[in-house]
Image 1: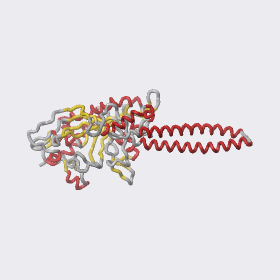
Image 2 (image 1 turned 120 degrees about the vertical axis):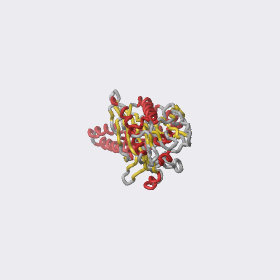
Image 3 (image 1 turned 60 degrees about the vertical axis):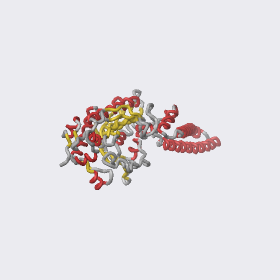
Image 4 (image 1 turned 120 degrees about the horizontal axis):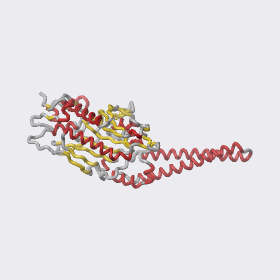
Length: 422
């Protein structure tokens, strides 16, 4: 299961070295990979050469007699032992190479900013930040006033970072996700309601390290994992298949609940529904030709912008720095909405170009014009999530605690204004 294209590694090792450095990762892994690949290929070549000799000798032995036959049989015995040893060596080196490859993230797309979490580049700011003539309430206070969010009973039933959406809160989420799905369908996406439990090979194949990722919930008795995004089942949907190249891109919109342990976020965003263990999401997923992936990425971003325009909140688009990219992403754009009570932008959507990284792990290919199988590129992008409720409530609140529903969302929610609960 090659993860990084070995041909790219051999022909342009400096590209992977530069990518590793941009991510803040160790670039000496490139020398390790080249050494293992070279030794594996050498062992394979010797194995194939001796196996060819072995086949030729088999014919000679059948024709020989006497001492010549004995000598040939002894030589054949030696050859068989050498062939077996070389085959074992090639297999051992292939396993070592694959193990190291599994630790190497995708090659960063040229043009992505270098550095870590704070080294993003702001590409665009859209919409005016609202000037309030009253003290704005935060989303949880509003959610409680509206009878929309119940954190207390969420904690009672399930523990911290769980919640109930009730009444207008439930209607708001359903309206939002239905609006996202409707937009996706109109753009030609196939709507999908996906499994939320997946096998380890689906999780691993998408680019998550099941053994080391502390974000992932695991059901050990079943050897299944709860997904943190429907990207996982959608990426694995066509695993080990050859797609119709003339029909690409294949575009899916997945609706699912998502589960994240939020390990390492102790003390962060403990108030409200910004950082929680369970939420719902509509996710775009695209399979396309590798040469079309850059443009497809910009299309996914444009669809995200179209959705954000419908909820009428100020937001910005950032180009995420290489050191803050996930394992499988070569480039990622985030759309972050302005949250008035926090005085800062918070992520609402992200879209990633994973080039052929996931497809190599999952064995998803298409036939090119010459009929030769090639790996596809895969991309994903958020179209709406539970977290959007935070931005909607805070940006559209009124002095009396009511919240004006954005115009485009009204037909889906069935209300123009969310009124405080009596």
